[in-house]
Length: 145
Ligand SMILES: CC(C)(COP(=O)(O)OP(=O)(O)OC[C@H]1O[C@@H](n2cnc3c(N)ncnc32)[C@H](O)[C@@H]1OP(=O)(O)O)[C@@H](O)C(=O)NCCC(=O)NCCS
Image 1: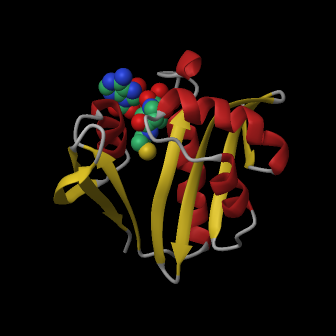
Image 2 (image 1 turned 120 degrees about the horizontal axis):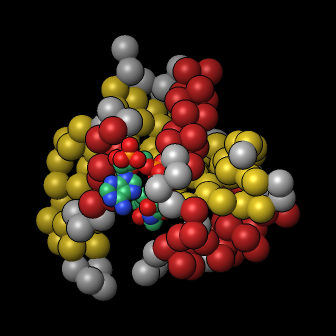
Image 3 (image 1 turned 180 degrees about the vertical axis):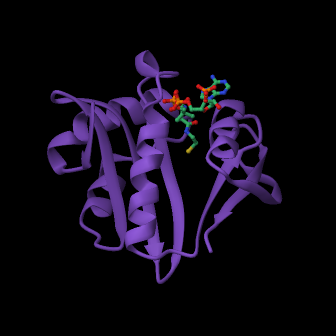
């Protein structure tokens, strides 16, 4: 498996994983506009030409926001999200980001376990932030010195 920058050629496979992973998936248009931005980092985990997972990190000055991370249902629990994170940590160092922050549904135990394992801490809870179903958002941040 290798980690590469996401391109338009990966989009159909990314959208398939996006749609199987989220109740409110990003649209094709959202990914296309993200791919045109210089201010965010988009990566995919590939096995030959097959997309196994992907992540989007937005960067503004020295701040990073993890907008999405998802792995194909068939390939979960094999360390692919960790590999994506490891690449994001390299990007973080290159861009000298002071912190990375993210928000996650409070019921998303697997994602919260992943983020804790990668050194993120809960810094706030936004009550009833998400809709369908209504749910709290847990805000998690990792600071770098
Ligand atoms: C969350 C997600 C990205 C994890 O991807 P993954 O490739 O399966 O994760 P990894 O195999 O790299 O696991 C890394 C760590 O995450 C945690 N984790 C992952 N899946 C887990 C699960 N089902 N239950 C509990 N912990 C889990 C564990 O701490 C794991 O470390 P371990 O294997 O040593 O126990 C994946 O489950 C997914 O795509 N979910 C749907 C999309 C989503 O919710 N994204 C996050 C919100 S944006």
